[in-house]
Image 1 (cartoon, rainbow, N blue to C red):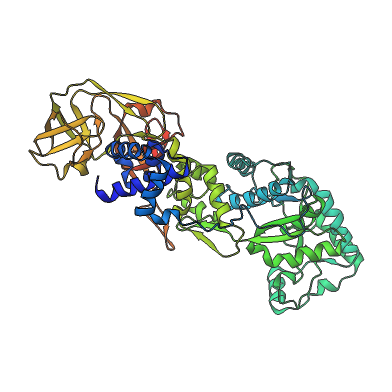
Image 2 (image 1 turned 120 degrees about the vertical axis):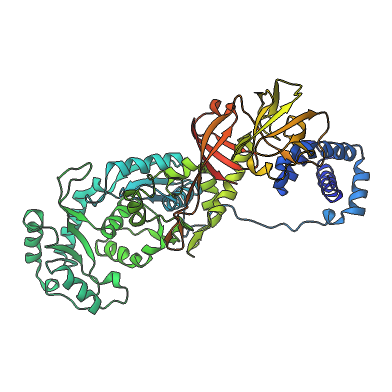
Length: 568
């Protein structure tokens, strides 16, 4: 250990001891060193002895002696730290009353849930918790053409995995009769009308801010056309439009659609209804009748705030506060169904749980913890600035959750054989974690090993190496296959190499996901596969367990014969 590192360790030990009544412990200082200098995680045994000596030396000093040494060598430790008042959680809500806040998460079951859904669900859930209020899960299922029970179930499973709990669970389609009732009310008050113009004419008039002839029809005619929508008109023949303002700068207000005809089998209601509410009409009414006090959604809906308010005003219904936040995506990992579906159809991506995707199923399979997702999303706050985050931002949070409980195992890629003579043991016990007490594992050895190919490139005859947890080896033959002889000796400044016993080695496939897109182009090399050897203890782990393969990174056991790389 160099003097600079020893000085850093002594500084940490003195500070911790002084702050805790004059005494510190080896494990605390080891944890601090590994936290600030992760490169030493593979050299724990080498530095642990020096840490123990330094900690013992510091603990023998009196509190006054510790203070004197700090004052002389590390005076910056005694400078009073300025207290930074940090606000935990989200910003306060406007007009919120403790115990009275009601929020909701209204996903459409037209695809698998992804990181963007997680953000919306977590923000709304946290606000309900923050004010001791209620949280509603409302499936926005009013488009039979796109929605399926498969997606409905996947959303519920994903939210359960995230640990999100709801006070009420419902579907928008539960209130179809209410939508009809309110549609007729708007028609009879002259605040909505039936439009039978062709789609291209409607679009043209909206662009040119011109009213169509249908908007001038009387209430009786509109009621007759409403009856025709029930059975006679075909999809596209007629729509119900809100009487907004065709001159408005906000294009959303130019007589938008409230209801339209969709002929398709709804996954729970079958063919009971053929007139379905638009998103704007449905969300306005549902938020009002559900008692939602604060409705948050992603900022692409911000222009619709005016329309939702206008619809509720026209019906003399209660209006919730509306808030907006940025969408969340990762660089190189699109969340759009329009992009993901063709990749699956073309076989470029296996399924929605492919570890290259930002779906909740994929993140879980990759080894990302739900607690890390929550912490990551809360760290972003309620900003409306575009959030195209690098994936390693989430990795940093995940690392804190997986590191303390991830068993350490040896893993060898591009394996080369090493035969060792005079091995004095037939088995060896190795700790499962360098800091936490996770027990030990016993590995049988007979002198025949696999070692990483990259480590053999610089090994020459006559040099010494150390097999981690086993001992020193003097190399007697180098080349395609190496030979060596076990020699007594302490860890010295020689290469430290991991290994797997040939006798018990278990071969697995290592899946390494990378960015799915580089810019706008699909990355043909976004999934790497390696055939590697690991220890037999791998077979005793449960599917889904997180492992840190030494000098490689954190990985999740996907099956007995496959692991998925999570991150460094």
